[in-house]
Each structure stands twice: as structure tokens, then as C-alpha cells.
Image (cartoon, rainbow, N blue to C red; front, side):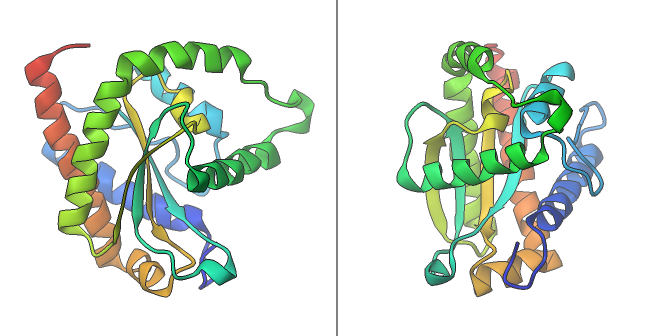
Length: 216
């Protein structure tokens, strides 16, 4: 929830829709899939599995960050890749995202267990890691060049949506909803467009690399 009481999901969806529109306009032969295109909340682990079912080549998870009242000075974007290494901030974000999953679980289905998913993802992470890192680096550059957001760097984390996707994947936190400047930018059409444009450009460059190398 932002300081203006707008849910995070609203910002995420608007940015994702801009991005999908750009990609579909540029690449008529590219299949662009969104895990949601309306006011729904797919379970986090199902998002990666949805991408797998579509045989995706790249998974981009779009989010916005937030901090407690006393930490509203924090601002900027962060790009995360899958890794067993945790940073302090990343742990806090993961706890919040995992709690969203627990809150969203259908009680008749029981508590989710990720042991098998995690074992499989540990293998796949090594296969796709360098491609995820390459895309994360390109995305960091494009966000820095195109947006008004502070660069907080590329980090490593074990997000549910990342370890259930069997392909190169990143999670991008597009700014802090608890920061007045970031929130105003994220709420603006220009800000949403700038962020989507950055991701679009990063995908375009990554696609050229992938087609040239054709390594996986």
C-alpha cells in the first residue's frame, strides 16, 4: 500500500500493461504472456509455473517496494536475481512476499511446501543464472538511463516467483511507495511509461544477445 493508499498491485499492473503493449507492437512474432491482466491475485508460486507452461524464455516479475514509516527516506529501484545468498533488505522483502502467499492460500488446499520445488530450482538456477545476471545488468543500465529513480543495484534473493520459473528470471522493485518522490513518479503516467520502456529496452537487448548466442 502506498502513502496515498493505492494498492501496490495497481502500479504493477499498469507498468506491466505498458510493457506488454510495447513488446507486442515491436515483435509480432513474440508471444507475450501476463500472469494477470485484471484485479486478481495468482498465487506467487503459480506465476512461475504459468511461465513454464508457456515455455517462456524470460520471466520478469514487476513489483514496488515499501518501508516502515521511519524509513520513508529510502528510494529507488532494485533488481533481484535468484540466489541462495541473502542480503538483509532482501530477507525483509521475501518475508513480505511469502506472507502474501500464505494469506492467499485456499484453506482447503493446505499449507504449501516447496521442498521439491527448491531442489529442482537449485539445479535450474545454476543453468540459467548467468543469463538472469546478464539481463539484470542490462535492466539496471536501462532503468538508470531512462527513469528518475535512484539506482539501488542488482541483488540476490530466493523469491518464490523466481525459483518456480525454469528460465532466466528477475524481479524488479520499481521504487518505494513509502517515499513521496518515488510514489508520485510511480503514480504518474510518465513514470509508469518510463519504467515499462526501460524493461522493454532491456528485453530487446537481451533478445539480441540470446539469438546471437543461442546457448540454451
